[in-house]
Length: 83
Length: 347
Image 1 (cartoon, rainbow over the protein chains, first blue to last red):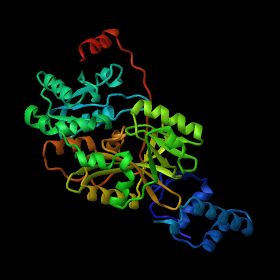
Image 2 (cartoon, each protein chain N blue to C red):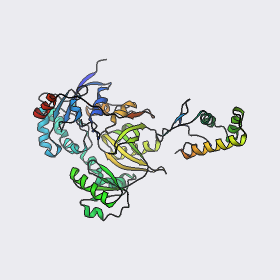
Image 3 (cartoon, rainbow over the protein chains, first blue to last red):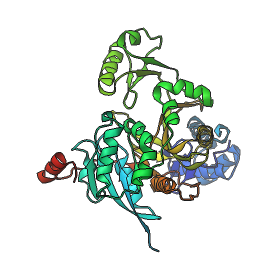
Image 4 (cartoon, helix red, strand yellow):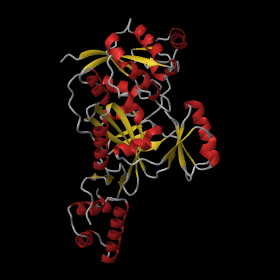
């Protein structure tokens, strides 16, 4: 999954979608995932990176990352939605 | 560098909760880089706030209502021109455009007042009651609509609720029942006359575009905005500039095919499946036009230069992600001022 290239993402976790005018905010963990997605990292690489960074089991991290990616898709921020 | 000095007359000074574009146009003109403007406000009613906004409007003259016809309008402008040498006039109301278009050549020849207006044909074919034909002619999706002259025909509509009831110049109400439809029809017909237009309700994001056409098919300015906060009158109280390639393509194609002359506003609904429905074309600048300036494109300045026959460069960039947030403001006005505009027709 890739995120849309034209998204404006600030260091505070504020996201602006210039195509729709929608804006969102995310916490530092979400921001970390977004940055890795922007670097075109694969989902499994993101999960292992998050496992290194946070003291939580892999299953929980995998679930949280998947949930976050589902949210990005729901809000049409993923690349395959780009028109 | 010395700026050229111009006298520019502007209508639409009714900066109310359903604002005319005049004040926003004037703010943009005041920030022009190519000229310095003396602003002449042209008003219809004595309580139009712009009349009293002396930091923006240098002098205001009252005009006869559009229903008085072109002859009265011309005579009044002729009278005003004995005092003010108006270089350019920017009308901002749909309801007055027909009169100004009809006298535009006359104004230029006799009073040396320049305008840059759509043609009578352009004005007519984009009229709300002609939108369906407009959609077919220019291959753009428009919601299905019906024209009604009375409530009996309205009650026999096949449209399912909700649908939108619209006046021929202004006003639109979404109705959810027959009672609401009849009520909206009567209110709108009493204010704006008939026909009243009934349009299928399209669910989606409401996007507005302001653009300027040179009359030869070129788009010289383009800024799209998504409404973020909408008043109970359906007006944008805040909005954000967006960047949507498909929307830009639709706008440029439309401007090219229609050879639109002057400023306009496109009202578009983008559905969840990314279909774009044109719901209305306003043949003048929108009330949020100052926002285009804030995004990097000064459309009123562009229009003035076009009216004067100057070579203008197309404005091709703007900043997406800018916001405008409108506010209301109470002015304190001396009764003497109200008395002056009421009795002498000028202030």
